[in-house]
Length: 254
Image (cartoon, rainbow, N blue to C red; front, side):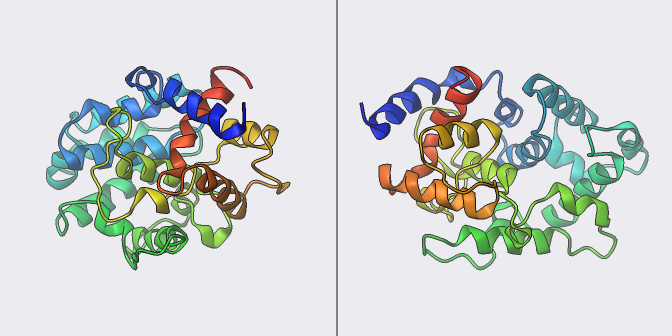
């Protein structure tokens, strides 16, 4: 069996509703309102490092602090309702970071109905536009005058040659729509063919074993190299293979 056929089978195996429960994508799946999905998804993607069970629990802790209605909370919270966030911490993401995220969302959603606008600054139909979009998003996200310097490390940018794994995962959730129910597909401007594959430890390891990555380091160029190979298998939806590579890495220890 060739690599494409093998990965196609694994996409079918893992791109299923059963994938949701044990994955951080389960956090935004608790909501139906698009803005709640966006905010919960952004937090879940940002906190997605470490054990998946811990990630999900910490995200649910955050959602509870927002009365499990994140869009309404960021728009209408009082100062006293921010106090519980002073005790929040997940790895190096702390209270200052959480409060800035809330502050940005509060400012942003007073002006916009969807977070998609922030991710499509400078969008064009060309294939390799996501690098520009993520760079522009990072600059925009930290445009508020009191943005803490320490928080910048939690929102990656290709400008620092980061692989931007968490942001690429978030974009996959928001953009892809294949009817299987894992990804939401609520954004329509960015197209699936433009997405870059999230390159975490599991995906990176499996992709190297399959000869899909040749670069020694894991950075933005590596994520682009992997995506370029995946586009040979499916030019219109290369990032669907994230399910196969991640599933092989975490479920089958490939």
